[in-house]
Image 1 (cartoon, rainbow, N blue to C red):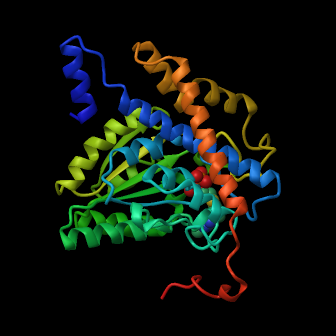
Image 2: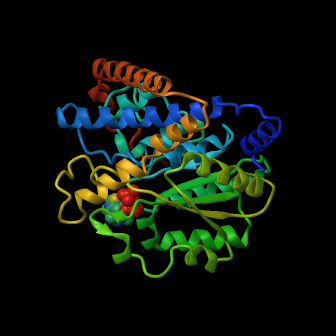
Length: 337
Ligand SMILES: Cc1ncc(C[n+]2csc(CCOP(=O)(O)OP(=O)(O)O)c2C)c(N)n1
């Protein structure tokens, strides 16, 4: 049983109220990610941000539920849709926004942009513009952790589209053979760019890791409590030498594939989007549950949203006013040896 589940059982047994703080913290993390992404959209549409960004709005419960179950020293790798993963693992809003705006204070001195944020201090080995690209990095990190015996584990976030990449199968094979401490977290938001996953992925997704003998579970990616509790159990299993696992999360991105993908009617309906936003929203699911339990009221959620917005606005102001890197360093820090 996870710590939160134990606490729940113990308190319910004694007729005590649940400890609300961990849940409010998860709500706050999701609200921060949403406010961040809304700001990115605003910066893009206001022509203040160069390049594109792929928004994570709608998928927040996965990044938060997963990262809450990890230790600070554990590794993650991320994707082109990576802002939520970076924030959930502890990246700074200021430095992320500075990176998106091409400023020197950014995580890559402004030379990587949205899809290349890495933050070694928080264990984030990097977002990756290559679909499936980070699977090798996460599996390599797990291999190093096992060799060093340092107790770390690695989480590899990826979209279901990455299952079309051969690298995924090479690494799952190695991870299984060598019993590596790695968790493959597949975020199935139903689309690869503008194509429904049923048109690009044959058979059952879960059959693929199972073919390598990898323990596989499925979770509702809109329910942060379910993601957290599943992950906490899986983390314990992997950390204690149980070998790799694969977690399939069912989710949905509310916005376009990227910020410029406005008219989506040719590949999905407005009704479908509305259904997810109304009935499957991760923030509403958690707040609704907390209210039902008598643990919180709407005032708290409004306050958290206002604080998140303020933090993001302050970060954006910092990033907008920050200097660009000097022209003399245009060819520096862009090549890894
Ligand atoms: C190797 C590679 N092929 C194609 C692309 C172009 N591309 C960028 S995102 C994307 C779809 C990815 O879908 P998925 O992995 O499910 O992630 P999602 O965007 O749904 O989060 C594609 C095909 C790429 N970046 N890298």
